[in-house]
Image 1 (cartoon, helix red, strand yellow):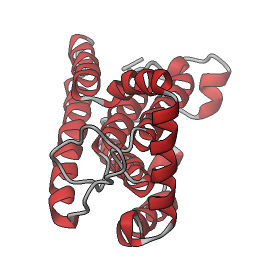
Image 2 (cartoon, helix red, strand yellow):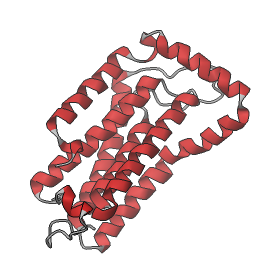
Image 3 (tube, rainbow, N blue to C red):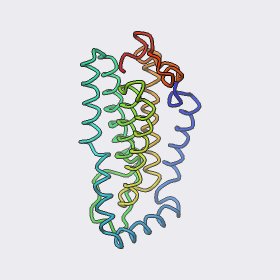
Image 4 (cartoon, rainbow, N blue to C red):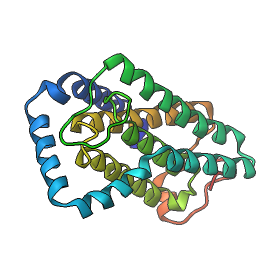
Length: 223
């Protein structure tokens, strides 16, 4: 069992998501003050703003859906259709949840010297949630065992970077990003729980990865 599928970790994520939804955004004084500071930095550093504007595209649909589609296809080619279905379903269901939660919670986006804002509402951040889900699901469901730890660290790091760009660009409150990250982690946690209980995913003990031992046939064929 990985940390992402532990019940205590899941409970913590649910509480963090609820706190970000209830107490975040314009409801507190900290986030508006931070967003005003970010607006000043964007004006003072237009070159940096352009670079970060490019980085934020890592969380866009072309990258996240493209990566998930490529990984699902690779699993199909490896004759692992159940894993491919689990990966694709995780990404698509999470994206639908983001849209539904935005409409249900109804939080407006920040407006602090931003030239352009998406038409959708703010909470949770779609870029943050979608990147965390797609990157981490690919790392844990499709990546070979000997690359799983490295790919997991890379997935979380890239998602964190994407989320921070949303705050810097002024299109999301910090709590929107926290909500997006937690939703993505919850989506992956649910996928791992379903995969492990159904037998689709059976992760080998960590010492087998570290020691370079191959898992028994059928234990982790997606390698």
